[in-house]
Amino acid sequence: MITLKNQYLTVQVNEFGAELTSVKSEDGAEYIWQADPAYWKRHAPILFPIVGRLKDNQYVYQGKDYHMTQHGFARDNQFQVTNQSQTAVTLVLTQNAQTLAKYPFNFELKVNFELKEHELAVHFTVTNPDDNELLFSLGAHPGFNVPFAGVGDFTDYFIRVAPKKVYRRIPLKPPYSDPEDPQELDFTKPLQLQHELFKDDALVLDLKDQETTVMLANSHDDHGVALSLSKAPYVGIWSPSPKQAPFICIEPWWGLADTVNATGQLADKFAVNRLTGKQRFDAGYQISFF
Image (cartoon, rainbow, N blue to C red; front, side, top):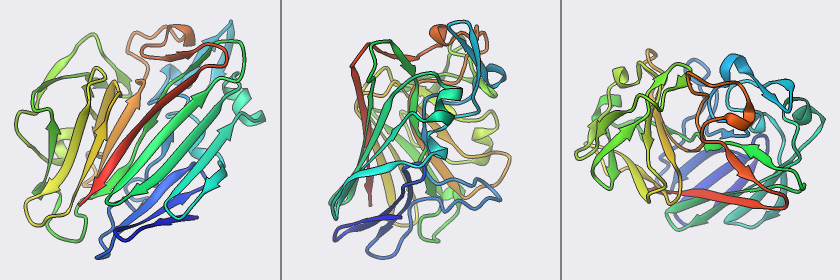
């Protein structure tokens, strides 16, 4: 387990999955969900090389069938630490025999965590080392305790999104996405949390790469988080209804689950990212803790 620390926050990151497992403030408040398997056994998995599910957990690439389960394999692989200081760490995953059986591409996925006062910056770099095209999706899935410090309950918390506006929402027909049947979600005012909000899975906002901040806060104390994205096409907001789970996930996504009318061909996958030979893809987000 890797520990990063400054005068405000203590952060832990597991080399397995490069997963953020804890963020504690100087007053002892734990912000990150602690993976109680009765609700959800993860903290903040990295989603690669797919986000969500494939149709029938499979796809076709260059005439060959491949099988891959929800959110891909990065979260279940050991990353290697390539650089570390008191306030930053870089971890890297590349292809291996197990990944190539599911995903016939060479790749380098690099994740950097850096503490800056009250903020944790997370940066992803995907590099294509080959001459052939690399196809992938990428996402983050950080879960946050609700409540943060034992004050109040789930319904005392709210989500605020900036800029304030009515967002295009991409509905999920679990477990698939339906971007051709968009809905609207009003974030001109705060959204008070209710478990029933997630009865149809995550609330997925189409951000159109606009700089966006999603804040989770409550009416009882000053604790909260604000997750900022500069160039993410989507963000998902999720809690596992109908379970009365005491956490909420705010998930930056560079990709989507297969659509309801997906062909199963990876080359046709909706919102897939493409890297030509020797190209790299950079993305990330920042979380402010207060």
